[in-house]
Image (cartoon, rainbow, N blue to C red; front, side, top):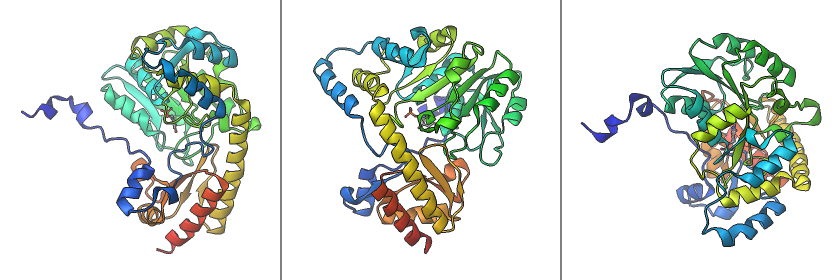
Length: 366
Ligand SMILES: *Cc1c(COP(=O)(O)O)cnc(C)c1O
């Protein structure tokens, strides 16, 4: 018997996560100059790394022979001050993907189930499958979460409901009021994991304070990341906020040094770099308007997005994507999400957005 067959069947059934194509890979494949390629595929911050984070990283380089602070004390202190909850309510992750997996490892037993929406983030089904649990995928409503149907889908063996707000890859948004009533409707012994990777991109009128709800709903876990507006995707750092008992259990299954020293220092500095955050927010609003205007001019339908990306319908997603790649423009095809007619583009700098729109016009001609 082959060694591969010794992996549990539920592991062998997992289809790998498909990331956005790296610039270096496209350069190799199409014999293009890396400098001419634009990547708008992974919802990264086009403004780069916050200057404060850059400084903080430089300052810790000389200490890299030492292990990181396994408890992430300084970053948790900074988060605690910013969010107004105790340091014992945080779980740090090697990216927020890690935090999603920790939630599954700690709370989702093999043979149990997790509920998530159709067209929601791929990591929910991956985390579910990797612990041998069953995913219950609830049909989407206008490409977003159907909260009533999701509450109904909770089974006696359901341990986690995954929600993304705003959602990726569709950009759809659920108002805070609806989330609150959802929490009231879900049994208190079912974890609700609210993934807010794009929270900082919300305009003031859409904001809501989910962290404050944890006191009332100890089954709520909020996850956030430094990969998106904070511009630190390559460092891999994210966190969950939970009730102390939940955070404690998630921390027990965490790898001891899952958040590295450079990431801890950078995240702490970026967290309070208000100038950079504001600049990133404003650039995203402007770039989003620019892209939507361009999509409208091309008569392409799009899904209104509350994130830093927008998903639009081209018909032949794979074909248009290939013709974009040939022009050195990387966006994200989302056929693996069951949306083969759509592409997702990340909001870039003004010049990148313009170049994307020009290349798209060419790509659509076939
Ligand atoms: C990008 C993203 C994340 C963040 O992933 P990291 O591991 O923190 O880089 C989490 N959830 C959603 C929905 C995302 O789109």
